Length: 156
Image (tube, rainbow, N blue to C red):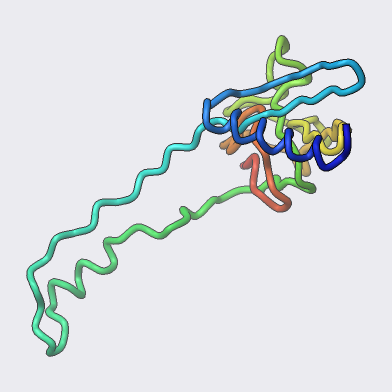
């Protein structure tokens, strides 16, 4: 089988995994092993657009100006020490699926304690706590793909 044929088949399989909502597909043929992991379905919800009466072209009314600050910012402010992904990869909260997570919200940690693992290129990278504190937020779940500099854990 030629490399181009394998690429075409792999793309078709990825499309099938995505369309069927599968978490994982593994094929083991004579000389070829293919493993495709799909992402968990993401549910997006958009805020409902407010319905307003047509406004005059003149200066905005006082009520429109008062309503503007009520809109929430796109990102909420995070206080504490942000532990960010040092590389792109797959986030794992525990050393294996059968074991408990390294840390949980509310747990105290010391500088150097392992917080989570990021798998990149078949290498497991343990990420350690940069400071002492208490875990206030864990912003990823095991199996999530994470990007460089993405906040994953917050320590207060």
